[in-house]
Every structure is written in C-alpha cells, then in structure tokens.
Length: 239
Length: 105
Length: 292
View 1 (cartoon, helix red, strand yellow):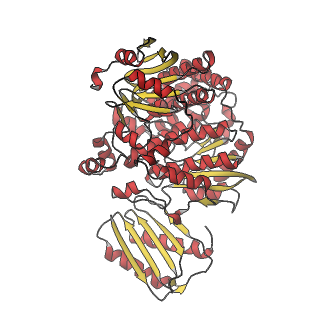
View 2 (cartoon, rainbow over the protein chains, first blue to last red):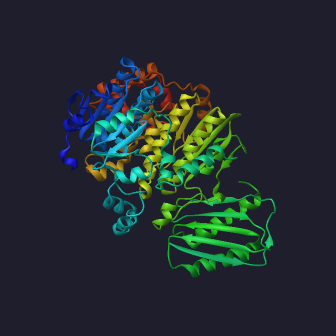
View 3 (cartoon, each protein chain N blue to C red):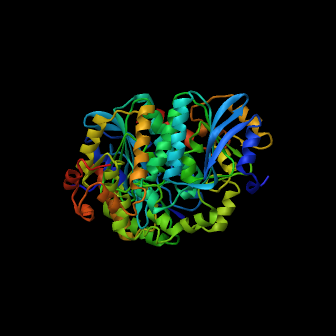
C-alpha cells in the first residue's frame, strides 16, 4: 500500500475494527479506539502537519487530560509530521519550550502508569518526531512510512559531501539516510507493521515496557554499535 | 583526508609524570593536538590526520622545526587537522607541550 | 572578566568548577571517536566534541558535560550523544547534587543524522528520568553557536536555563528558517533581529531562562551554584498543569505579536528598543516584576 492512499480514517478502521470515536480538528485529532476490548486514547495529526506552538500545546493538553481523567489508559500517538513548523513567530514564542512541554507531559503519563506507543503511519521528521512518537515507550512504523532528518540532496548541500557518496554509503549504513528500515536497525523503531494492524496493536499493548531499550536494540540489530557501549562506559567507568 | 606519520629519535625524555594533554579544537583552519607520555627510548611519534591532502612536505618541515626547538622524547603526539596554516600548527604544538610540561590538564 | 562566549568547552569546565576538581570520563586519549565522520572523510575529534566528568561546584559534588561548539557546531552524533546519556544515567547511580550541562549545539549532526536524532531522544529520556529521581539538571547557554535543534528541546526539559545575552535558544536556527522559508520570514544576517528573537534577554523575559548573567565565567559560576541550591525537580501533574496554563497564556497574549519589541512593550517596558543596550545587571533590575 502506498503512503498516499492510506488516509487517517482507513488507518483508524484498520487499527480499531472493534470501534473508535476520533474527532478531527484541522490537522489535529484525538479520541478513543478499542483495542482487545480496552479503551485506548488516540492523539495525532494528519497531512504531514508542521508542528508549531499551537499543535504541540494541543497535544500536551490532550495528554494531561488523559492523565487527569482516565488513570492508566493506554495512549497511542499517531503523529504525521514533516517536522517542527519553521517560522519566525514559532521561535519568538519559544517553540522548543512547547515541544519540551509535550515531552514532559508524556513522561508524566509514563510515570503514572499509562502505556504509550507511537506509530509512524505516514511520515515523521526531526523535531516533530522527537517530542511525540519517538518519546513513546516504544515506537512502531508502517513499512511504507518514512522517517527522516533530511533528504540526501539537502544533506549533501550542507555537508558538502558528494550526493553519490552519500547514496553509496547509505546502501550499507543506516546512520544518516531516511527510511523506517534504518530506524529499525538503529533500535528506535521497535518493529515494522503491515497486514493486520489491529492484531499488531493489541500485541504491542499486551506488554508494558517503560525502560529505554533502544540502544540495546540498536546494538543487537547491528545498526548502532557504539551508543550502548559508550553510554555504559560513561555510566559505570572510573573517572 | 590524509594520514601522515613522523618519527624522531634521540630526544631527551620529557617529564616523567606528565599527564596526557589536549590543545586546540577540530574546527575549520584549526587543529587539536594530543600529547601523551610513552616510553620508547627517547623517540617521538607524530600521527597526523588532516582534511587537506597533499601537504606532506610542509608538515614535515613544521615537525622538523618542532623537534629541533624542543628536542623532547618519549612522546606520542596525535593531531586532527582541518586545514590549519603552518603557523597555527606550530602554535598549537607549543601550547600543547607547554601545558604538558606544566603537568596540568 | 573571562568571557564564557569565547572559551572552549574545556576552558569552560575548568573556569566554572571548583579549581582542580574536574576528573574527565573517557578523556581524549581514550580516542572514543566517531567512525561515521571518518567514513565520510570528515575529520573527527578525540572526544567527539563533548567533555564529560565529575567535579565539584561550590563544594558540592556534581557531574558536568560541556559541548565544544568549535567542532561541528557542537552537533550531536552517536558517540557524543551516548557520552551525555551515559553521564545522566551515571547520576542516577551516584546521586550528585546536580548535573550541569554547558551546552553549545546546533542540534543533530547531519553526517550521522539518524544516530544523532535517536541520541537526542535518549538524552531527553535520561534528563527526565534523572529529574524524576530528584536530581536537578542545570543548563548553561552562552556560547557562540547557541542552543538549537534537539538540544533546544533538551534545554527546556531541565530545571533551569542560565543564559547570557549572547546565548541563543531556539529550535530551528535563523539560517535554517531563512534557507527554507526565505529571507522575508527570518533574516538571519540581521543580528539585532536574531538576538532579540532567540537571545538571552528575550528568553529571560518570557520565563524560559531562569537567570540572565553577563558574559563572564564567574557570573555563570555564581548563577549555577545558586540554581543548584534552589532547584526542586517537580514533574507532577500539578506542576505540568501550571506550565500548561502558562504556555497557553503566552499564545493568547503574544500570539499576534510580530516582533520581540511588541512583546516587550506589552510587558510594560516603555522603551523596548533600549533593552538590547543594557548590561545584564541593569537589565535584570529593570525587568524585575515585568517578566511573563
């Protein structure tokens, strides 16, 4: 299935065949879906939303409402984003603080017993990804979705490394090139989903894991060999 | 990038208890110099990794001059360079050696 | 006065901590470097651009990390990020009086963009885990490259941000916005515009920076000691609801402002255009009672 053809409604139907009540408001949506008989809070965005101060604020408010009104309810983040909104106004208002606030609210939910999963179903880029799905307990992705920091032509312009060189190296190295497969190899994407999404979602929510295991996964999968070792050496090493 | 190595024999051993020392930063037109003590019969080994390819003879001249001025031995010197001028290279080498001999970090 | 802005990461650590107290973990001679840069034929640094270790500040044990802006703009790569995450996790075990982050970073290092992005996420998790365990994290921002990208988010996860006017804090740097959206959106060469949008004074007036100091090592040190003294990490629902109300009020009150000068005027400054001219002390005095 092509990314373009999977609209949000289809996604909701496939994730929650038992039923869902999700309300759209512009690029933002929220509501609940039923997964394996259990209510799941759903928060997300559509149309590759640029995440500006209002959207980050709105998502944070929704997380706080779930924590306040529905203790322990699992949360599923379905954020489709091209990254943070690039504008003078967002910087003027301190967009980094709004992103951080969203992350803090998710941490509060995690600490108060809400399982949190992220699913990259269309695209996830940089700052918008950092403060949302990438901050879940575990993040999954559809096989046809895209995760990136920057496309290779732009990367080539800025780093002044020839594009052919980047393209060549990206065939073997997952370290810089866009792609959900690369993020899986590096441990940030727990698993790639296709087929029966409802079954995948229920299975994912059947385990609750709050420790950050991404470095270990990255090492196991051979995509990120240094992070685990270096962090452990700093954590436990004699100064 | 290019890797160059230089070795000089017959230096007088530098301070025995000196700790490894770093000077400079790996930035455009700059370099970092790491000086470490190593027992190798008064020899100095210098390893250079540089972004600027084809300047081996100039590096040779700068290093010859450095060794002639200090005559120190039992050192391992490691350099990461991003196109620093010979003057900057000499300056960083001197800074690194001064700090090293001062025994400081 | 010793300039914090001009100093290297190592000079900052030496100048900020109690004299002679710093002990580095994974120092340069360990050569824990980025293999990804070398693979792309790009010079790497022996410490991958970050200094981490233990020391004392005002007599109290702390952990410290300092990013070197001179190396790739302090950008976060795999090794760089793992050193910072490891340090924050070390604090979970050793329970120091706090962790001090001397940040100078443009965000994620493009040469290893995926590894850098994930590393920033791990740093974010580690900062909040540490604060949740009651250990404060204090961030200093006064270097030449400011604090942007993922590190700009990290900054606002900390207990306190201490800035000089020269420090800059944001998410997307002015150059990135100009390149993507055009010079009419954000003129990155208009230094006055840049500084009053992302500089220390505006961040202080908005309440994003807890303290503003002169560009002086001793001033940063004194402010860090005070922040350590007063920090009480609080990530409770009540605390986050209060923060939420504050951020909502900011959008309502200032959302239509086109320029920092409009915000400052709204805050009650009669001559907002004069604020950039004031020294830190005079500015702080004038700002008393007027911050958002």
